[in-house]
Length: 94
Image 1 (tube, rainbow, N blue to C red):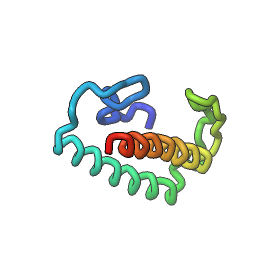
Image 2: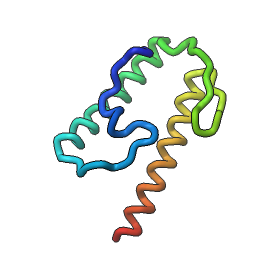
Image 3: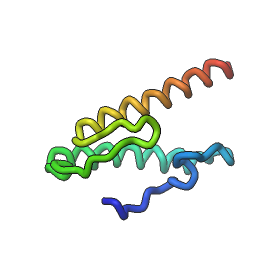
């Protein structure tokens, strides 16, 4: 849904940086959103909602994506990249 409002986009979108400490309530909201989003994507995937998508390329690497499977795979790789950086930063802070 191209016109869907994305919660927390202003705080966590491309080009943002940490501006404040995250309260427990925001972390809980983000965790709930993550879990509900995964469930919704899985349901939509099985219901064929993504059978046809408009092909596009990612902003960062210009990777062309034309199927939902390519989108999901690229998203997982991208998220794992973030996780790796977060784990490295955590290790440095210990």
